[in-house]
Image 1 (cartoon, one colour):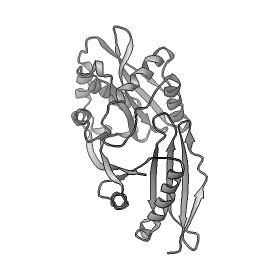
Image 2 (cartoon, rainbow, N blue to C red):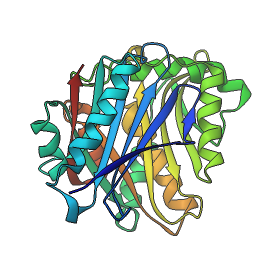
Image 3 (cartoon, rainbow, N blue to C red):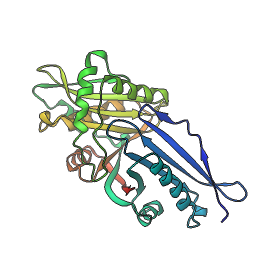
Image 4 (spheres, helix red, strand yellow):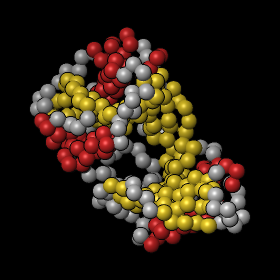
Amino acid sequence: MSLRITPLTDPSGGPRHRRLAWLASDAGSVPVGTAFLRLFTGPGQDHLAELTVHVHPAERREGVGSRLLDAAVAAARAAARRRVVAQAEAGSPGDRFLAARGFRRVLTLRFARLSLADVDTTALAGIIGRPHPGYRLASWRGTVPDGLARTFAASRRAMDDMPMGDTDHAPVAWDVDRVRAAAEAVAERGDRLHTVVAIDTSDDSIAGFTELVVPGDGRGDAQHYGTGVLPEHRGHGLGLWMKAGSIRQAHGRHPDLGGLLTDTADGNTHMRRINDSLGYIPTHTEHQHRLDL
């Protein structure tokens, strides 16, 4: 196949990453594939690049993916990156392609969905109603209220020790500006961010949080973002409590919402047990791969 690889200008970016893009087209200038390379620029992440490659099914096994990959890897090297990571569904052509091109599997993610039509509201109320001495639930929509912003930013370190396999992702440093910017980014694309937190009543600090992003029209499926409990507050059932509260809010506020989606590292057995107990049904598995440059 006669193939042309064209670098593109990608406007997608942010304060902590920039993206490069390439279009593969055949002799008739018909697009047959794309590649995107996200170059992380935040502290502790500037050695990483994240790759996404798509090839039209009819054009696979013609060298399109390899040419796109070569262009992206060359750009990653030019940007002084040491690692390229990519993700694909287990057993898919992309999964096999990455393995054949020298990537090694470093993390397995389990995806699951909760159908809101099938939620047992009585059981959910029972979970939420169980006493948790020393803690109370609170919630907000959109950006964190000023009075909770500092302890909410501090609570983000609850995610620092989540199982990440050998992906080489350093913990992300959060501050008030960053949590506000993340919420604003969700709003700018037209979606709605819902946050439920557990508050330590001894000092009104946030002990844990769970986030859910709902499509702007309130239809389809919502996506869970982070759920975490600070190490010093674990062992009290706060993760289950908060996630049950988040489900009840979604069920009550968004009657046209179909379900809730979540993904969990295979090694995160505690969160997988929480999801199972709340009725989430496994949908598929994905592998994260890493290439060392």
